[in-house]
Image 1: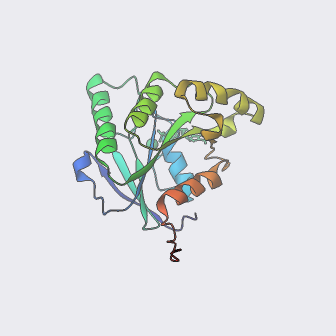
Image 2: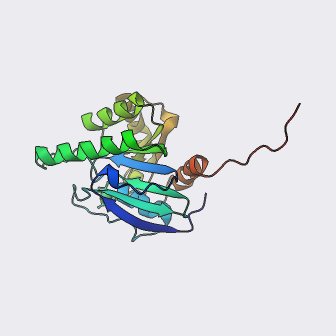
Image 3: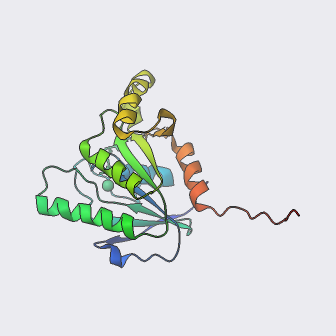
Length: 203
Ligand SMILES: Nc1nc2c(ncn2[C@@H]2O[C@H](COP(=O)(O)OP(=O)(O)O)[C@@H](O)[C@H]2O)c(=O)[nH]1
Ligand SMILES: [Mg+2]
């Protein structure tokens, strides 16, 4: 798919504020600093869309973006920011879970992990959660430009093992050089673009 139009809609404090509108939703989850906002900016070719930060733990809200007036991109707050007070971490978890459980139009979750590191316990819990609730998800290994092709290949098995996914299910991505962007957009297109109806009915 081609992204022609993207705009920020609003930041939400709680799921009950979700404007919905019946459009499909695609959500991004991952630890803070894993590259969620950068991925949103690179896939939309809109460097000013989502705020990126080299300082972890900045996105404390659910940020909503409307793409092509056709679907919502949902940027969930980054988890696993150890330095935050427990009360605040609990609030983030409640927001993520509240959204995932209540959304009726969620088509797919992209679970981001840094290609350089083994997924954490939080990443594992997140994936278990998605599996438990039967939410379709795809693992995206971010910041691929930081590794050589050979190193990437060596790191994928550990990611697969920790998250119990197959190597071909992992999308390698770089917001810097565009690696994996076409594949990501293709998959999102399959989820959000209406399939042409078969009109001919065979007897
Ligand atoms: N080299 C490189 N850096 C990245 C990439 N994606 C994100 N970053 C950097 O990682 C930091 C955190 O990115 P951000 O998108 O704000 O992460 P978020 O907290 O998950 O939204 C920023 O300094 C980004 O510039 C990438 O694909 N390649
Ligand atoms: Mg962010």
